[in-house]
Length: 153
Image 1 (cartoon, rainbow, N blue to C red):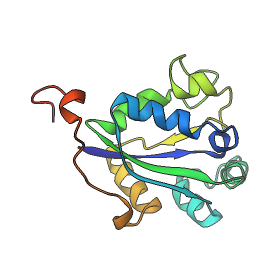
Image 2 (image 1 turned 180 degrees about the vertical axis):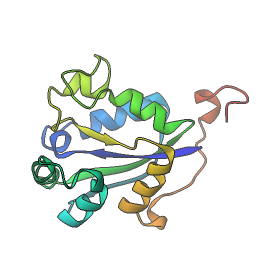
Image 3 (image 1 turned 45 degrees about the vertical axis):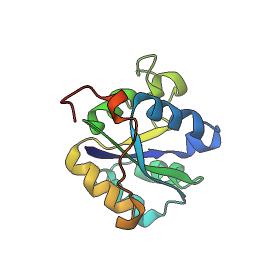
Image 4 (image 1 turned 90 degrees about the vertical axis):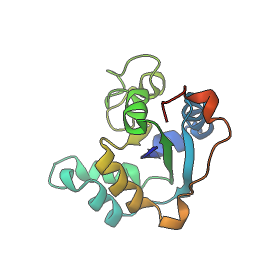
């Protein structure tokens, strides 16, 4: 099973949507392997968004991500990265399809509710950035046979 990282951004936390967004992932069949509330720092954001540090909007992005705590989640499921990215929708909430998380809860490019890993390789790096190894728990879900068909996992 694949794992992916999701950050529920300050726009999610401040709007009190944490439970609603987590519920959407769980109802889809993804398993929570790690979950914590944390305050991000400039240091971790410079690492996480290293590809954006030199862009003119970086400081605004970093400031918005440090505005309040975030919820970090490691989610697990078959093709979890693809499933989560499909569920989150386009980065710009105004362009995200209705039914996606951003399409249902965002009208902003920056205040767009969630961050989701964009590849399996980055998911591993990002999970390790936000979680200690002992904070990501492997356990067998008793409902897997009702989430996946024979031979899917």
